[in-house]
Length: 472
Image (cartoon, rainbow, N blue to C red; front, side, top):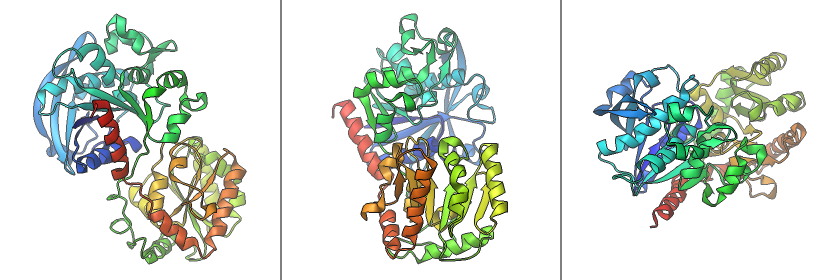
């Protein structure tokens, strides 16, 4: 079985969010299960010179973009046993950023056509092209409307994964002729609600549509979560499947993680106390082993539940507790946490920005991890926290619900609350703080670290789905 994983970003080459982590880890996990999986992404100018030097030039071709043809260079590199292809066009991808350009629709229409045009020029004809988010949503559409009747495309099947339904690739209808270049009788595939909607086209044309957790697969049938696409999702529910993401257990491994002050395991968690003490020292907090540290590593935006945290922060910080916060986002929340750090210097530590090394240190050094998201398609942070024995507090939504269960029954791995309400969240925090004082806390830590959120588990579900699509 051969899978070509088409993505707009992938670790370690180009990264802006969780998609890069998935695209870097899932193909590697599939290869370990003897599935031939290769990755294709744009050759952005943000990719380091060192990584560029490891790439081999394969060939150059021209790719149709509606009524014009554009240069396309094809490069290849290998990382962690996975072959990566890179689509080169400096006009489209020499921008200094991955997204946010006025012509993103044209840039990724080009990329989608280039992925298909590339296939005859490489030594890899996929059985399945696995597409991700709106940037690759045109691949299933182009395949069905422009390529399906000729070799080597006749038997290729497609999977489309929705990582976040909020971003759909919505544009004005005049792009159909000038950028997308679909035949007039196929234009309806990408038309929706008075505009072009690229994600809608992929949902229509892909053989299977997946999301990054079973709960999110159900949620996006609801207008509250679907950002206007719920009708199409419900109509195509027969092809919808939710598969929880995994985490790269080699990157996030408390036993071997070089970012930590001291490594530890589920069998011997003594090193976690060392990381806690060093984290307190790093931020200038009182070095107390008996006070629980609540870690927050996130974007400081309402979508991540930071408005809930702000609403009851004074109430929470009144407890014998310390907060360590890493992130950046809306000025309102950055200013608020600055003020709280100044008001409670012995209880609140703050670092604005995202620093991967420090994130690892917080995952290992904190006792509790707070993640009260308004919605969360899957979420990786809660699974990373579990891996490091840091007990998550989450709202029961999306992948948070699928990976964290409440420990009130002495069987769960964290603390949860249902309603998007600040006081419900504060009550869950208080339960966690009470639990920290009990003798059973170390049992809960071990139970969290024993959770299997590896890509090996998730890869098995993907393989089963691939086989079903191919009739194997």
